[in-house]
Length: 67
Image (cartoon, rainbow, N blue to C red; front, top):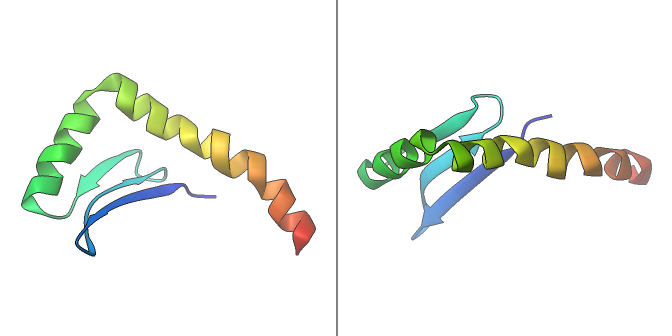
């Protein structure tokens, strides 16, 4: 299970967090700066890493039961 959180502006993805990578990745010049800032802030990074457990792992059983 992988948690992905993407940020878009004008239909262009500029930053993404992936739980398999474990950090934010920027895709535009501005997105790279934002990703560096977020990766250097331990509270933001730990909150993003915890989202996999909070969202994905709590809902996976519900999804499988509905299939």
